[in-house]
Image 1 (cartoon, rainbow, N blue to C red):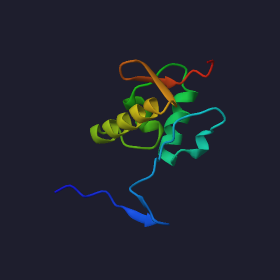
Image 2: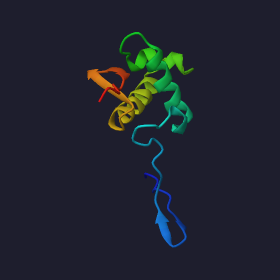
Image 3: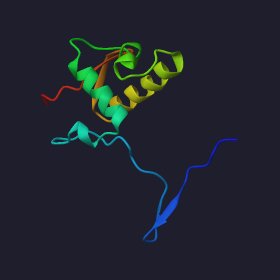
Image 4: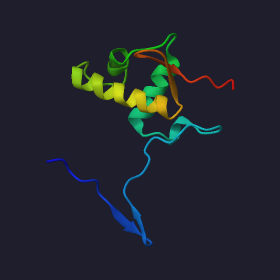
Amino acid sequence: MAAEPVARVESGVRVVGAVMVPHWREGLSVDVLPDVYRDIVEVVADASSPMQAKQIVPRIGLPAKTGKIEGTRGKLKRLVERGWLVEDQPGRFAPARRDR
């Protein structure tokens, strides 16, 4: 049986959860990201070419096992959805272009 999301009430407002990975916007630094997401963004930013999840996992200190790779891939996809990274080719992640 799946666990229900935890809800709490603050000042009469029901809070179901918080956005852990905010959408990127001008002036926002990687310091606002949770540690593992910040590590991922920094590894990708330091790379000379787009990276795959299996290349990133050992660089952020995790064992290169299927579960860790898949979990990291999910985080990479979330970073793409939020504008921190791009996935120009399937499974290959690079820093988002900021020349807009």
